[in-house]
Each structure stands twice: as structure tokens, then as C-alpha cells.
Image (cartoon, rainbow, N blue to C red; front, side):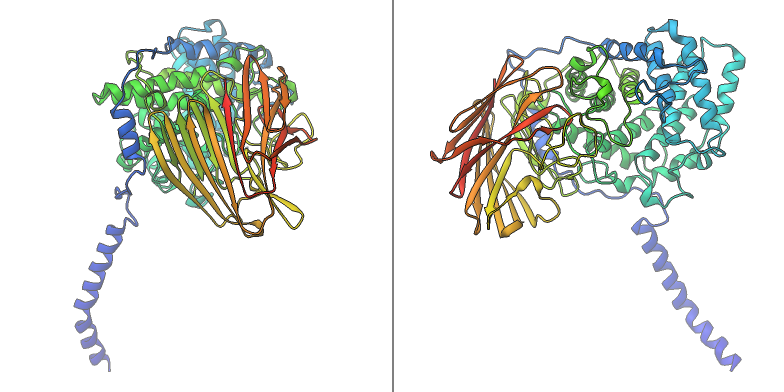
Length: 638
């Protein structure tokens, strides 16, 4: 028996060897167990971006922004100087409204002030920066023994402080900082890392750690290369073919923030495994971001941390990184497009940052009201300092020699849809811009037309983000009775259903481009599987006269309605609202928003009796109603 068994083993050894070889080939060809580059799916917006940017024509009336990189410091310095009053003798930053040191606030003060010191500004505050850096660095160094919420966020801010102060600080303090920042083990001191969580749960926090650790390496403080490579490998799968980053629930803000951190990873010199694939995703993500930008310069709405003014500072940083990259690659056209996008982003929030005190959210409510702040985080102190910190990094990566070129919405017209991960439609034409959420996260947004902007008009005048009945952010008035976006409702057995209330139950959404000309964009949207068995077909047409929408309802419903948010106040300015048989008119800060029902002639207009707040202000809700199944209306801004 043993002899027969041995002969059988010898007979099967070649077969086992062949099987083993094929298994190894399969493993490596599939990418498992390796950090090789993967073949990427085509970029869905490649042709659109190429056509829009490659055919840029500078109109006779086009003008550069007239600003330069000093804008970043000009906007940041008042934020930092008002924060000086919040600093304790120990160096820590105490939030002025919740009266405690909130997570990351002290580190963000360091980053914000360091960015200014590097520009030769706020040199009188250098000692305050030293004290804050020491306090925050001690917290970070001891995080393995005393867990530090958001430890990953500290490192890049503190290393920027080290960079800004290393020629202005005595040797003993510098050595102490180097020991504190370079002596800890990232896997122990950070919370969102391998060993503590599975790869699938490593999200935007991890990208902060990557940027910070690479910055430490660049400055010769520590070389945690294995940590960087291992953790970057967990992040690549979070990108969509559009180059967008999937954070939990896919908020638009936290598509941008990780891409910002990973752009800094490359800026600080990362050249290890995964770099080529990451660079391609960042290229795509920046182009997508360029196309989703409003004609006012604002970043898209969608999900948590939205309408915070740090979003545009984040965009400016990404766009400056891309501009400098394209300049190095010998592509002055793209470099100029991204340079202008960076400046337009920063200029779009200037009106709130020039108020005293600075507003960190896109409204003019008193900051102590905290109107628009996330319920569980997003405190005034840290999130205002975050604006200044992001602008500081934008100035760090910027190449001031690049000349501006028109961005896509200035030289063309377009409409496109994102994939199911981000479920948005964008269109820009003749100065108008719209954003539609086709399957909203109802904690923050409502399904339907949630943004209508026009260049030169305050963004809250029509609508900048939808209204929700149970927001995961603070408001200073009663919450809305229902979710509200511009869009239809339908009556079924005595009950009104609103598209704005629908999300996961929507069966299917189809986007259909219809007309694309320099001064006209037309597209269709259809929603199937709606409550009551309804199907809604919408047709949007954008042009110089505004946006014309036709809503058609299919199914057994007996009446069609359309709801329109109408601004009452942004917390400071109030509007005047007029209503007629078939129209609504809002007069606000010298501008006029008109909504007119064009068909059917028998449609009626009325107003709801409840306030409807979002992060930007408080609205009332106008409603058009018809017994039929079709309605056409026009929205315009002047």
C-alpha cells in the first residue's frame, strides 16, 4: 500500500505543478496579492471634456479674474486673526460658541496660520503658532495611549507649521517637534488604519494620514513608506470611472476632500506603487469637478458638510495642483483653465468671508445661531479655520506664472449625468447652471431640481441646495413640513406624492440628451416605479431666457402639481415675494427671480403656510396645480 501510494504521488506531481503554476498566473493577472496597475474603464466624460476645453475660444468680452495668489492670503488672514481671541495660554483653540476645544481645531489653527507665515503675513503671530503646534503635536504623539479623535487630520497641518517656523524657531523646539511628529507609529496613533479596521472601512480619514505622512517624509521628519504604500492600496478601489471618491453615502464634499489629500500626496513626492493609477483618477476627478462647478464658481451640493465655505477652498487647492501639473507637462491651455477655475472658486465665497465675523457657511445668519452646521460636528471654530488652511495649501502648490483661460461654461454649453453612485445631472448654458439630484440622500437633500444659479446673481436667490424635512444639520427656525426641490407632485386617491420625497423606491432613472448647441441645451429625465405606479417624464431646456421645464405624469393619478421654493431671507437680507394666477416673483438684493406657468392656461398658483429652511436661508413654498397630467413652466434670473 505505501509503495502504491508513493507511485501515485510521483504520477500526480507534474499535474500539481501545472495547477500551481496556473494558479500563480491567475493570481497575478487578477491583481490579487500585488500592487500592480490595473486597466481602467474609459473615462465617461473624456469626449465632452476634450471638446469643451480643446475648442476654447476667447470671446471679446471675456476678462481674466483680475486677482492672483494673494487672494488666498487676503481671505485667510481675517479668519486667523479673529481666531487669536479663541486661543488659551496653552496654545489650544477654544470654539467661541460651544466653549471647548473641538477635535482638530488647534491643529487647523496651526495650518491656517502657517500658510500665512509662508507668504510673509501674520509674522507677529508666530509665537501663537509655536504654542499651538506644540500642544497639538503632544496630543498626536500620545494618541496611542490617549486616543485622539481625527488624529489623521493633524499631521499635514502641523508639518506645514514646522515648515513655516523652522527658520524662525530655536533648535531645541525644532528637535522637540521632530521627535513628537516623527516618533510615533502611524498604525498605533491613527484610528482609521489597517489592523484596526478592514480595508473596506478606510475612507477619507485615511487620505489625510497619507498626505501627512508623505509631508513628513518630504521634510525629513519620518519615513513611513510601508504605511503609505499599504494604505494607498486600500484607496484605489474607492474611485469611480469618473474619478470621484466614494466616501460613505457618497457626499459630494467628500469626493473632493480625499482627492485634495491624494493630490498633496503626489505634490509631496510620492512615486511608489499605485502612483500611475492614482494620477489618472485624480486627472479624471479634476475634470469632472470642473464640469460640475456652477457658473457662479460654487462647488456642487450633495450630502453632508455641504454649503460650507471650505468646499471652494478645497476646489481651489485641487485646481491649483492640476494647473501646475499641466504647466510642467507643457499644456498651457489646460493649465490656464484650471488656474481660472481655482480663482473663480475662491472668489465665489469672498462675499461671506469679507463679513465680520466671517461666515463659514453660505448664509448670513449670525454665526452664534450655527444655522446650517452639521449636528454632530462642523463647529464654527474649526470649520472657519479649515477654510484658511485649505487656502494656505492652495497657495503652496500654486504656480503664479500661469495665465488664465476660459473654463468650460464660459466657452460652451453642456449637460451630463453622473453614475448611480452620485446620481446627479448637471447642465450649464448662457450663464445658467442647474444641478438635479435623481435619488437624493434625504438626510440632506431632496430629489429633483435642487440648484438653479446664474452668473452674477446671489446663489441663494432661486435655490442652491434642496430643503429637507428632517435635516442632519441645525436650522434656526422650524423645520420644513416636507422635502422640497423644484419639481412635480401627483395626486393619487386623495393623497399627494412628491418626487422630492422619493429616493430608494425609485425604480429607474433615465437621462436623455436631446439638443446641444452653444446657446441651447435640452435634455430629458424619466423616473419610473414611483409611488402610486406613476412615471414622470421631465424635459429641460436652457437658454438665454432661462430654464423651461415640462413635467408629464403617466399613470392613474388625477392631478399634477409643481413646487417652487421662494426665498424669504438669508439671515440678513429679506426678499419681496409676489404671486399671481400663474406666476411667482422674488425680488432680492437687486435681482429678480421669476417662475411662470406657461401651460396649461388653467393652472393655479398658491403658497404653502410653513417655513422651509435649508443651509442657505429660509424659503416659503409656491405651488402650481392642474387637473391635467402635463405642465410647462419657466424659471429665470435677472
